[in-house]
Image (cartoon, rainbow, N blue to C red; front, side):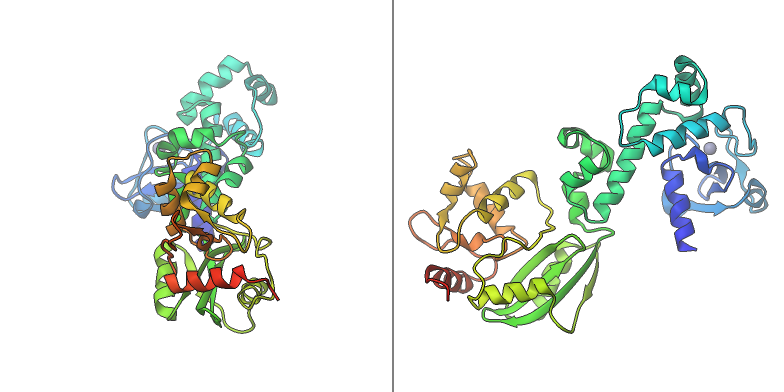
Amino acid sequence: MIKGKEFRWRAFEERDASADGSFVVAVRTTGIYCRPSCPSKHPKRGNVTFYLSPEAAEAAGYRPCLRCKPRDRDAPQTAWVKKVCEYIRRKQAEKIILDDLAAEVGLSAAHLQRTFKQVMGMTPRQYQEACRVERLKIRLKQGEPVTRAVYGVGYSSTSWLYKDANAKLGMTPGAYRRAGEGMKIAYRVVDSPLGRLLVAWTSHGVCHLSLGDGDESQVEALIHEYPAAEITREGGEPDPWTLEVLEYLAGRVTRLGDIPLDVAGTVFQRRVWRELQAIPRGSTRSYEDVARSMGQPKAARAVSRACAANPVSLIIPCHRVVRKGGGLGGYRWGIERKRSLLRAEASPST
Ligand SMILES: [Zn+2]
């Protein structure tokens, strides 16, 4: 039942004309009901009830919308508009040519464009864009990394995201993802040579790795980082990633490079984190070194902030970045741990 509701809300959000006829959407605040493809501005989800027929909505006291006329089951254009919508949704990752679209339904391109706009309140191209943005939102909510999600829904570059993502997503894609809405995260806390070790992961990879004295503060930090995610604690035998980190801390493994990561950050943060992963075990860099190798020699302070924001200790080895004069600099998981890590890494591994 919940799935049905979810499906209907999505069809409504996407103004999916192919859903017309299978249900109507009633809006409590206006007392009006619409077909799923109604071009009018959308109400808040909490104000919406779904009915399976216009009759059911009217029995509950709602009046039909004058704009989308949900009573006329087969308004003349509905059939082909529905077909066009289906076509666009099927090919939404491709470049759609208006002439192909027109050929698909046997109309002239001009007529198609005009009538589609009348019925849907937007052009076929805008409809395709809206479908993509919806798909992008879903993929980001599922926790997919921003770049992969953007290409995955058919964009050929990520540049538009940084131009008008706010308008399209309501916030930056990173922020959208960072809240962790719709993400499923599992974690485990185990004993390690450096205290309690928390490893958290999604289906894509490790998203959080912390070291601390107690479990509670670390779990709280995880929840704080992904306030909207569904987070569950795992017991039992440690997973291979946790085991590998433990092996590393015991000095029996020298690299953690093969563990997949699933981290969200700003473009700059992610560049810094990639740079850190290139620092080999046993050596250190200064914040200035990192900034310079990124081609932004003046960004040392920003580099230091990106290190402090690193959500995945050890795998992204921010402990290998120190002050220029030789000072240790900061460490999100305790300066003593940074010292121990550097000392252990400086000696040849056993
Ligand atoms: Zn309507």
